[in-house]
Length: 402
Image (cartoon, rainbow, N blue to C red; front, side, top):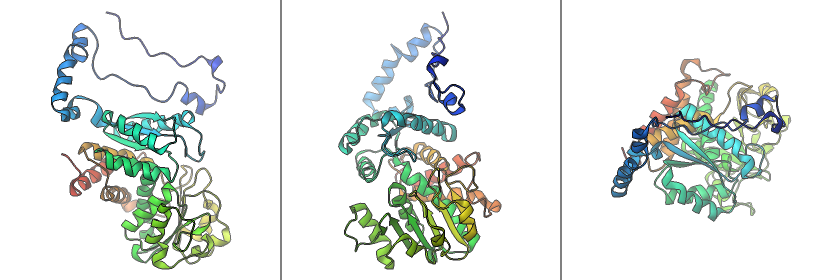
């Protein structure tokens, strides 16, 4: 019998207008493909993998749907779903242009978590259509990773899907960023001798990441927290707040009475955490507390460039790989899903996110320094430490099914 044919090769050089560019060369033909795990060498193999053998497995699952967890790839497979409205720093570029990012996410899932992932870009920005589509696709997957969906729609989409589905639903732009930022901040607080309960934190940006970072910092014991958008501090006295922003204001500045501009609340602040883009004036940075902590996470241009930040801060982090202390979501989401899938979790709780952050922070150990507050994505200990902590937390929180 003839061997299985090789997959088709990418388009010829004549159809590759960016020939020679290493970025485009790497992406040529995409970054992933499906590989079979079942042998198909002869008729006997075919009869087991497909008809008639496969019918026995189908009947077993029809009689007991939980058998899907044993006899399909579903329990180890995540859908990476986007509508292309908030891709990286590029914004609303649409579903077709979002696909390289979703492929990249799927590759990271496999490389760093051993999780199979399928990129899905939806040709709709309608909240109801996205929710309905993902819900209908859900039986094919063990988890849903929402990606690059713009705020405020992303909040409703995630919340409603979490209510509808009994598998993990996780918007990584929110929670992946929040987990890694908290892990890095815990170690930065150690270096500067600060206690969470008495630390003043300012977050610039009230989109998906800003909201999630604020919530996880509150869960971790930060009590003096101000979140700002383009119009200043979120405070209930403002009449222009969305429901999400109003709820966040009630949890943050309303309790401390802080109002005004970003510059106003930076005066005397211990921590600046930027997830907004733009540039913070140096004179505002200079008014922060001694031994300040500055996380400028916008890509590719941090809100406070490290050269400026180091004049006034003791610990500096960015979202970039060419500076120390990169806040990179790949440290979180593969291990979080690995742990959740391992215990067949029905969802991802706040406790599971906090456990992931604690595990990341603890991995730094005795190597902790101003330029090393978070592990490298290539530290082989990361996926195991995160997944184990998440699985344990899922059991404590009562969402594990095994």
